[in-house]
Image (cartoon, rainbow, N blue to C red):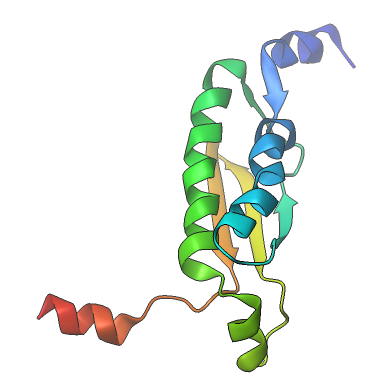
Length: 122
């Protein structure tokens, strides 16, 4: 690597390392919610972030993953009953888009009950 590339990497952390603790905490959270630990896939494309924002990113992703596990992923029994695998799946795809971090987080859970939401809104 060139000296310039090394200097650019000073004070940065790989995003997969930043989020490792969050992802490692999901099995315990799943147990607390009475659910099976999900399969978690992350495509991070080797992205690094400034160390100054690592803590903030961890906090954001704690809430994103918790929301997916709590409100998206169903219990193993329910999943099996509707023909899904017992283990839920959460996928995160991260990309740099013109120096902005773009993320897509999705799970294979039940999704939003749009009819119920519409009914409550009216």
